[in-house]
Length: 102
Image (cartoon, rainbow, N blue to C red):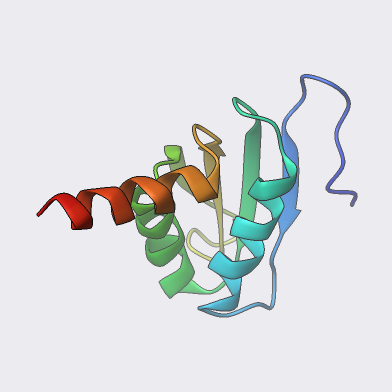
């Protein structure tokens, strides 16, 4: 399965077999390649990643649309749907600026 999608279509990042923190690191790297407003479907089979990746994405200023259990037995795989809402360096810069003003 390719993680490249036609213009306007969602991209898929299959992280089966990956564990935290690598699931978020790879997700963040993939989002950096995408334009603002792009939709990324992240597939994970590591239960903690189904909680940690969405939490980390929100902390980075990205939108998490849904987290859905999929597969033969519910909970064997999760699909996290995220939309890129900001560039990573802009979030970091705003945090630094906020800390300076305190």
